[in-house]
Image 1 (cartoon, rainbow, N blue to C red):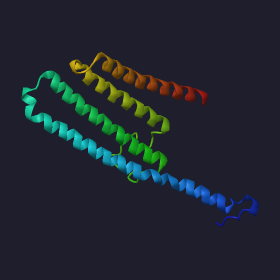
Image 2 (image 1 turned 45 degrees about the vertical axis):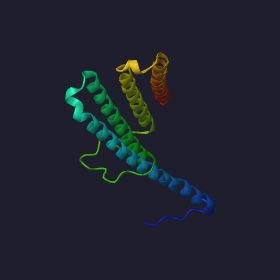
Image 3 (image 1 turned 180 degrees about the vertical axis):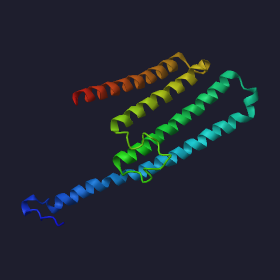
Image 4 (image 1 turned 90 degrees about the vertical axis):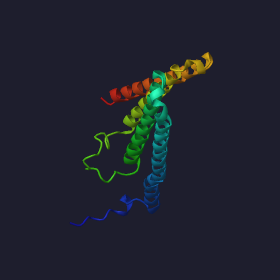
Length: 179
């Protein structure tokens, strides 16, 4: 089955095709950034095990509050790692290319389904969770902080919460306008 050539006036000019190809190919400039985020994930792994190794020798003599602070620190690092993975998977699939082992049995169900709006929601939810854990760690050791510091930490956390609510409201308004 052969295609009928387009009349000259319907063909894209060469310059336009070249520019469009360049723009389309530029998405690959993000690939090194995602590789860098994978390296950052490695740093988080080292940090996680450093914290764990530092705490293990004294775990039997730790106060309950110290154990809770350790657990909160490890959860905080875990959430940061999850955030990095979400950004790597979603960003790569949304902006660069589909990931090859798409039908792998271990493929997360959300992979390939998180659009920019979903990525934004997951991102702000992770930031709020990380901020909340950090604030909880601060509240568990109040004596180390001044009232002004506590106020600023709380204001910063609340600004993340308000930002998250703002993003959710914008997404809700956007979804309503498409109906």
